[in-house]
Length: 250
Image (cartoon, rainbow, N blue to C red; front, side, top):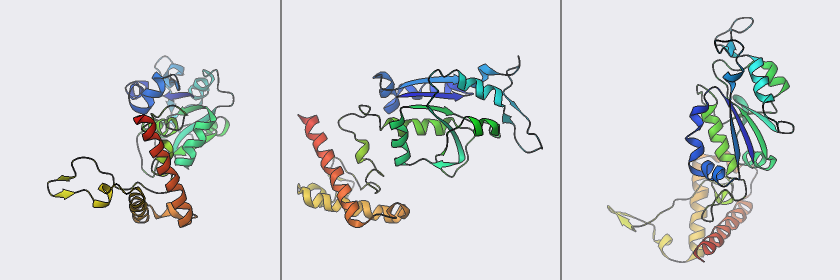
């Protein structure tokens, strides 16, 4: 998968690209990530890339020239999804991440200051995406968030012990409680059912806990889904996870 990131602060991305899921994707050649410094297309010798708003208003805007010229540096831009990270955009979720991964090429634009000139939005941006209802100083952190969410869906990026298909949201439910050794710590015990070895009972317990967590914390995720559909998706996810474990053990 090809990703280009246009930003005023490319140095912020250097350590991010060396670790975790994204670092693994880059190292294995499954992701080709290019950092584009918007300031390299500054409009004057002082390195200016922003200016005051016509008609007044708080905050400076990134000018159109450096934005368009930065996009034109991307040789494979034809057909790519050009994404601007913005609070007014479509909220990033599991389905959108998978959709973007299947497209294969993304150009991410990270805004700063008061935003960007709307001519670039109107003429070049194909997708406006938001990662949540909170304000941050720029699009760099949202871009990192989006990259990891998308690259998890690129085949081969996740190892055998991991699966995007069994993550929270992939089943339509939040995660169930998980436990590891020791079975008791400072008087806190792992539920007996989890230790029972009865896979059917364990799956029932996990489904009930996942459903309970979803109803409590994110009830909107259940809209449009039947209990039978949720259970079937959950069971498929559990079977897939078990097959992965067997392959890893073998």
